[in-house]
Length: 302
Image (cartoon, rainbow, N blue to C red; front, side, top):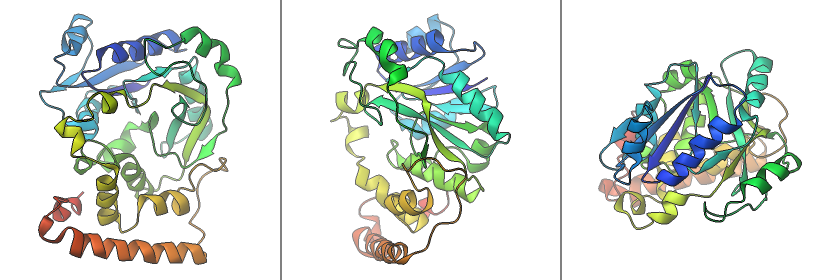
């Protein structure tokens, strides 16, 4: 049914728990799990080989975008589902998604889950595997609710493979990944996708950026900051991530159906003008001579 793509960077214990949760809590047994292994010297490669997983591998940390794109090429289903390796999939997640797909009836959609703990639902069942209270989570998860929401831009998310291939997957200039989710959403918007829905009943427990915390001083992570991803997005699309999420995706309000054109009120135009000033500053002053390595020419090609 779904090709579950999981980029991982020397995070074997969490990857095992993620895979275990998928197998334990899925309604259907037709999913394929395809990790992308960055490095893998912690035993991840051996684990995947010994258990006959399909996977892709880069010797160094290639980041989320490259890893997702490589692994997605191995998929054999019609649906690409992006997951973090520190997710725990809650019961019936796939049944919920299948019901949603049946209602939609076409392939132009972006569906995402609701994150528990480090996300929309505040239910603390532990910050790491040592403190994780799985029984508490399973006993209380059905009573822990948010709402179906508009304009999600994060994992876990589901996209039809045909649409994924049309937009070229993730844009790899957002290494190692910050800013890549809204960029993907913008590419989907340009392809005519208007269903951007976060689903309350599709729940994952999120331990919370375990790799980023563990490797916060690693060169491949330290060189990337939220501000750099935001600058690349602005240079590429001419508007900020904040503007895109607020005025186009209408993020985090209750889901009201497929999106329409944005309401171009006074605040819309004020913030649009501010974004244009920021665009000019970053392009012509901040990154003059490409001194901050934003590679504007390369960005504009993707």
